[in-house]
Length: 203
Image 1 (cartoon, helix red, strand yellow):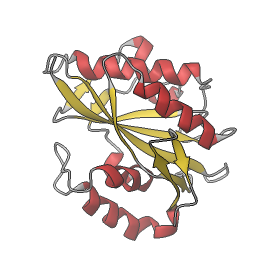
Image 2 (cartoon, rainbow, N blue to C red):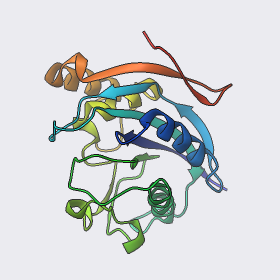
Image 3 (cartoon, helix red, strand yellow):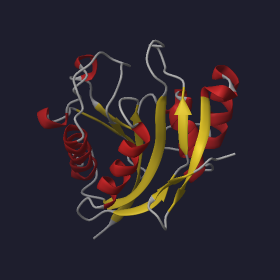
Image 4 (cartoon, rainbow, N blue to C red):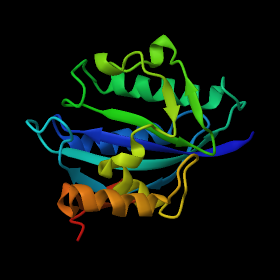
């Protein structure tokens, strides 16, 4: 079976966010046909757009997953999207306004070299009403402008130039850091594969 490297963005700021994201990594690692290929450092990040809420915890996970047939109707990324939304529901994701608090947010950032813009199946739509009818776009349409994505993604794939981008992940991280400021994302722990958890503090 052909495999592809996918990158998943993780975020949470409701309850014990660190524990939630740790459990989410393990849930991703046991998806059918998937294998864990890497886990970024854990970051505390300043909320974007809506400032009156707790800081987020963010990370990125690299997964090797079944590729599925390519093209606009690719089942590989769609199947992964459905799995991510199922995990969010399992963790109690609630319907809230865009950029609001999240029990768990899982975003499909990259799926190999695929460039996709397809209608989401109903069960794969976001609980966020503002995003419910948006297309599934891979690479994620906002990834290149979000430091809370770029910082952890650069831990795993700094030299990667995602499909459609004109710069590497690390170059995009440096650019966005110059806009948002280095304090917008703060690494607090490094993933320990032996214990299956983030161990800190991270300097």
